[in-house]
Image (tube, rainbow, N blue to C red; front, side, top):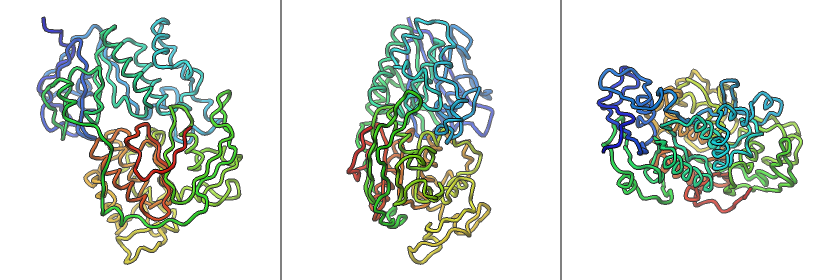
Length: 496
């Protein structure tokens, strides 16, 4: 007997022309199956998921649910965009480092006490190692911890179908293995079916029985997971872009880019750093590594002038000790920065071109604040530095042409006039990555920069990182849980 069909979408075409895909969608999930939905950023995966949940009115085709409960209870989705926010509180980026603001954030344990099945709850907590997180405020969780929390929260309701969007991003190897084992256990013991979105076939988890591929708003025929895995062979991210070298210029030869001396940080009873000593010299390339919750984001917040505790600690940045009269913008003007926390809190309807322009300034939204060292070769005959005080948000001058050069370098020029809040999560991440480069910074801090990117965008980004690193005195701090993502130029490692 054929297994029962749980979700069937046949010839689906949505009425909304702004979200309509390039071709009708056919999708089927049967009992006992779990499906990987694989495709590059912006290929239409999120639109298909919303169609499967019944979130769009169909102009053509039929959607059928054959579930044990109402679809809104039987189908649960775990998304990781802006996951620090809850219905009770809203999150902004620097809130995580402000002690007085953290008090308004609920504890993880408070939000995980909703379900009444204590035995099932404890089983989930044990498998996902949730117990150590229960006494932490939501906004203090690392990106990996937050994903474990979000998955546990969804599973407390025992859904029949669980949708996970890019579930492995931000997770260290042990947690990825735990999540794989958890999905296997839930599938075999409770009959939960998964629909999992991914950007590459090499990420297809062991629980998946079938897969669909998406590209350009079109969905493939259903195939076995084994056949899908054979399409892509994993490997190191190796790429080169000779044109990228002209975008970067020598940085000043600082004696000390970063130095921390006997740094101690604790939040309540939780000790993050104890007597941490670390020095980064001009031109060095570092991989900062450690398990989820080890303090990587806290460390980077001290360097990027986001954590107010830096004023009371013995920290030197760019040859100047913190707390000696410098402003945070004196520091940030040297730095290009990307992190998961930044992405989670970055909410705007501005166009991509406006987002990129914000990277030319000290802070997003302050387009008239000048940088005394920014470069713009598109309007100069030499590579000398020049002031940026003449660039304003309303300008339609050669500065926009320079911004388009950056978008073209990354192959993202087609997104220039798109609204940020209409992009897929992976496209948003890519735009914020580009934004980190456009001021040609002296120090580039990239926290999981390839997270959620498809293979082509990862290759392009890797090539630009290599070109940046080749410029004289450029300094790189790079964080990833995937050893194959570490750039070949990295020669130093800080293990937390």
